[in-house]
Image (tube, rainbow over all chains, first blue to last red; front, side, top):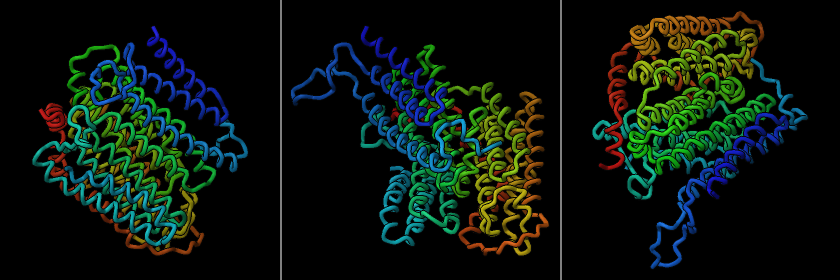
Length: 117
Length: 485
């Protein structure tokens, strides 16, 4: 039953992240919502690789041969890559929000209305 | 060893060397970027012969064989996209030498990173690799949109960032579900396994992929970011967004539909294409800003490409090629005019007021060629592919032909309005005209010649597209070569 809990948590995180991204007006809160959304996807990805009573995918010494008992290491590699991508995205977003605060004086998304049509 | 794959490390090295060398010698920076883009263009041309012999070229990163390694698979459709991306990238880099006045190092570094991302999408044969290169493209686009740190640019960039990050995360979610369902991320292996699996998750995965990639191609209703971004970004990068970025993201959609899922999705592509086509043309009629008008024009042409792919793959490939050339030509000619008239104004009413006694005569000719080609006037390349679309949709549903011809009429209307307002005004305001360098005129002349060539020798383009379409219609050749069976 533990595996089902992590999938449910991942889906709840995705839903909460989407809600935060859509409903909050403060730009920083939107970026936090984006982070929660991608964290939900990462949790989903890692849970896919889980094996019941699995051990960490590290070979302790040369004579080890119980490879079937390991959890899947590929989703973990995918999640590491994705975390780094999100890091750079968040950094870029925060720099842009600083610039918006300098130009507009506010970081409320409802007040960014200078582009029309 | 695939020759065109050299372009990715070359451009990456250029992207990381340019800021370092820019500290010591600012003059070298454009030269490094031009060298790197020229090397990638030449390497993509050198791959034509191997692809004509072997149909699909495959290489595996790090030597890990199929289906566990990351595959690089170039077939004729990929090669066409690679040649288009490197060609428009080289022309944009050449154009930017005299266009960009400040922050050269950041600009050229980001330009090289954007080209790395686009070329990676065109080369890859692996789903997660597609996601990573899609993110590289997107993040470079967000940074390049905010290049002029003005009010409108920063606003366009943050809006693009929030929407685009969500959309590419949908692609990641689709990749995660694919891995959970089948256990592989290799496109060819996935095609083999998906033909035997029937699970309610397969339409969900397809829907998520298409939504994420449709955002990047600016298909209605996910098109709202494109006009803001085109207004805000420097014009050479705008030309890349309208030509190379559209080519790469439509390539990803077609690759996932035709090769991985082996379905054509005719009805959805037709509906989405028709709505995009009509909405883009109608909204373009209302625009005053020339860059927003050209953005809506690009959106409308993407609708045409979708309809073309839904009915006949040959016309889709031919129209994709023509639209890429035409959009690059249109944006670069507007940029050249803005430099010639020494103005940063993009509103057509404002451009109308400038006096134009001694402007360079090549620019209106180039813009008119692009605009008429967009509208589908005979003897230009737009007509060749649009004629194929008209004749193939006539067999399926004549209402589509009526919609397509109506959109062509609207395209002609707003293009001629733009041409007349910008280039034929009787303004009184006097701007000191700046002479144009050969680096700005050469891209315009090259693209115009290509437009006229594929307009006159239309059958050659159709024959090439037909050969490429043959390789797309059945995915067995791709699967066998990639998996090494």
